[in-house]
Amino acid sequence: MPVVPSADEILPDMPDYSVERMLLAGGAREVAGVDEAGRGPLAGPVTAAAVVLDASALPSGINDSKMLGPKARVRLLEEIMGCAKVSVAHASVEEIDRLNILHASLLAMQRAVAGLRGTPCHVLVDGKVVPSALGCDATALVRGDARSLSIAAASIMAKVTRDRIMQDLAREFPGYGWERNAGYPTKAHREALADLGVTPHHRRSFGPVRELL
Image (cartoon, rainbow, N blue to C red; front, top):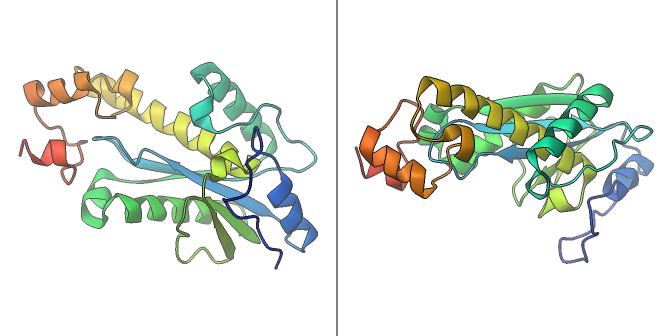
């Protein structure tokens, strides 16, 4: 199997397709990138996406979702949906509280890979840990969303999808600012949590929520 460059090597200015091309040249038929969104919030699910890009039709401007504005993320999501295999999956608040956020994130990633049409030959996972039971070879890439186009594409899919979920939940539970903070522990969110109380969508295992119960 080709040796994937370590995280200690100098990162490119933007993610590229070099790791994927190396794996494809080594015999992989399809390479998927996997990333998650929503490990830090006090509310809402954790969302993961798996993306298999077409090497002959790579959308321009793909980058780590944290480096893009909302309009650019939505534009790129639409382009990715039009030319790639995409699967998005979640782990619920109940699963986060039962398993812990790391294992719930890995579960969401596993579900995202399982949702692809056909199992990829190799999966590139953002982070240090590879989910179990993927059914194929996998490599964990530290800062993968800054190194791999496939992981960066997955980060966009996961981020936009989860933000939309939190916007919908904000209409059901107004006052917490989820349409702006996506459930992250901003000052306004924490104040609203103290004033309005805990909702069914808050993560009870997280300290600021647990302290109010």
